[in-house]
Image (tube, rainbow over all chains, first blue to last red; front, top):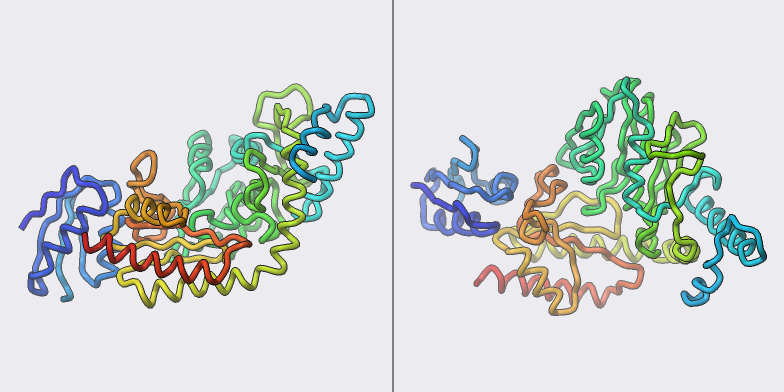
Length: 69
Length: 330
């Protein structure tokens, strides 16, 4: 699954990410595309706060794994 | 002294002859002694700046030469970042508690040390030693933290003791290897002139600030800890930046638009600042929050003033909690 948030400003990418993950099982992965300058630091903080995982694979591309319900 | 009276007695140029100028010179000297005693530096080491942020250039560039390195940190002020571009420089990274490791410095390093971070209140506990020069950014710490023994240059901002804006207090230690980086013909450190009215008003402000601070420090510390406890316990998905100085708190909330949060709080009578990208001019998130790994979205910065009461804080926290729930449910 690819969640395209290009052009969307903070906090929209992370709100949409949380909505997209809400009904998914643990272990689910998706690719988030975001060019917002706050997304890099905030996805790392979001992962720490919510117990999920984020990896920056290339610029503006984030690999998200759901680790908790 | 009331403000109109300050303007009446400070118009003459203190360096000229004549009775009016002599009394203006006396006022300037008294102010100098007042700052000297509260800031812990000799009065002949102090200089007044009408452009407070010019002090970053005076303080850092004046200590630099070809054979030296400028060492600064990723939570320093943007003014320091700008100055680093003109010199051999190295940026240190803070750890997740905002602390710097000064153990690997060289003897030819000139270090920029921020005693207190103005966004988060974070206090740097270690001090660099055996270096070529130490610039101390005391613009947020004000009278609260003493300069380290080995300081070379230092900068304060009058607003940190509730004095008038547009006045910086700059100091060069007698022991510093310092050269004026500005074009100059004589020994004056800044082109000036600096408003004597602002200097006198700020000296009055620092006197009453220090007196109040003694009585109110315990109250402010309790309010800080009450706010932190409330946010952690009652507002889910919140992230508090590491702190230190009791009058400052930086808190971020997941899934909240900071611009809406700040506007709503302002409408309800609570003016707060923010480090989020959507509330900054250049649309970039706060480099301090990013460096600390703290969430940058939905961020607010709180300043606890001397006059802040427990009742105000209690009401504010209820409004904050309610506002965040409303914004999240939109």
